[in-house]
Amino acid sequence: MDENNELILAMVRYYAGDPKRINHFLKVNAFGKIIASKEKVDSRMYNIIDVATITHDIGIKVSEEKYGSSAGKYQELEGPAIAKDMLSKLEYDEGLIERTMYLIGHHHTYDNITGLDYQILVEADFLVNIYEDGMSKEAINSVRSKIFKTDTGKKLLDSMFDIKEEK
Ligand SMILES: [Fe+2]
Image 1 (cartoon, protein in one colour):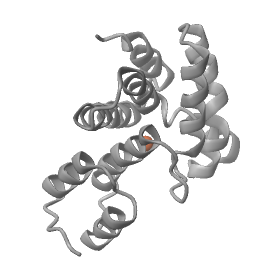
Image 2: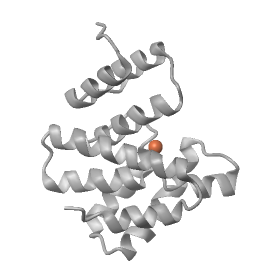
Image 3: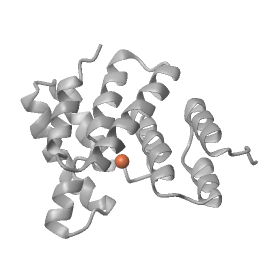
């Protein structure tokens, strides 16, 4: 329990002065853990989802500094190496670091979602981004049918945004 507290604190320090980003990853982390738990993933996958949701946008700072853009492709490019450095310092095991790097490097890529951990990270991020970006009902419905797969993710989406399931 709470084994990722040090990682959360490291991310808060990393995003110092940027409470919006800090709020963002904490919300994605909370949704990710709820979905993971309700979808009954094993403890290993749960921890990967926990770590990946905390760190998923870690590339955003360097993307803005280097390219003047927070576009997904730059984040995917820059994020994994920064996460590797942080996670290694906190002594996470190599397998977990590898998978987290993969997930960070693909979390804005939706055409080949491989694995339930990847799926849950994407759903959790959408649950927060839909609200933060003020997406239209139409756009939400499209995301629901194209991206969302887990029952828990769909239920959260439907309740939060008052979506009536369409077929
Ligand atoms: Fe995000």
